[in-house]
Image 1 (cartoon, rainbow, N blue to C red):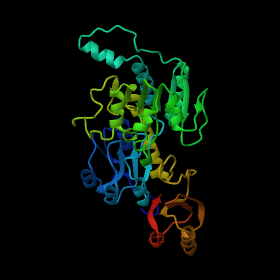
Image 2: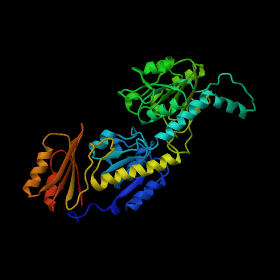
Image 3: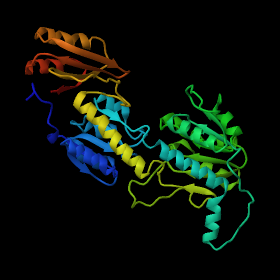
Image 4: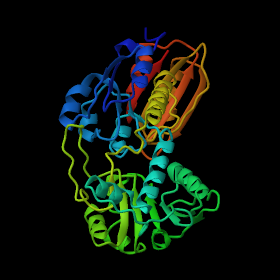
Length: 409
């Protein structure tokens, strides 16, 4: 078997958590994997108990894949994040273990953008307040404080796939768009890139946050930043919960400095739908709170359910790492009449020379070879023409600084 076939998929276990879309389950089952799908997240101890025999783990935003989890996952090859963010995964630890991580950076973009647009219109019209009053029997048919979004300035903090699409659609509503990003970005339409975040905050009627979950973004918007916003401005956070100082936001809303806010993400979020949610923002006027549903449309979840498994299949079947968030990116041509050997190692000099010396010593001809590195690891894919022996495999595994060796067909 080792000279002819890859490790059989029927013996590989897939664990999918947090109610991943059924299309993903169907795709894995169609490939012959053993699949277990759970509705909720697992805490660290629960995940450690279940992951010991798992080869592929699929999660969304609540499950934390920590160093401890990875230390107890000897068979784990890859983690699929069925969402945009990957801050719930210890990427450095995953890389050190030779575990490739894939996400879905674009599949729910439209859903998040539509929610942001809807919320800014509702808040500018004070619909949350009007609705709450009417539920209490209060008929307040007044235009006071209600405005169109046309002609207003939208400030975007973060100008990636979501920020750019929101920029284009906002302009189609007649809004002026300014943005700030830590990277130099090509402005779409008539949008203007600002030199600082403060510049965006000071001139925007509505500020929408679309940044990633890196630790340095914690409390990116705090009391000082909120104070620099225009009186009566609106803040929308559909990015990450730790990006905004919730207590400072509550104070700005209660004082009337801000007209309103929409928050979809929180510093702590319930692990399941059965857990009670609490927040300092509960009960605050003209504030829309949603349970992390920015990407939770049937269309987006189905798109993600199709996208992530296909990236995983490409990695398991061919060694390709297209769109991996932690591995060097390698996309290889189709291979026929040869064997493929995948070698993951710590990024130190001389590993490739040692690999090739082993092949030369055994008179094994190399058909093709591909190497890419990042700051942590090197990833070598070697296609060889001759059959290999157990001795070759043992020597490759014994190379100092080897993390993982995989054999494909």
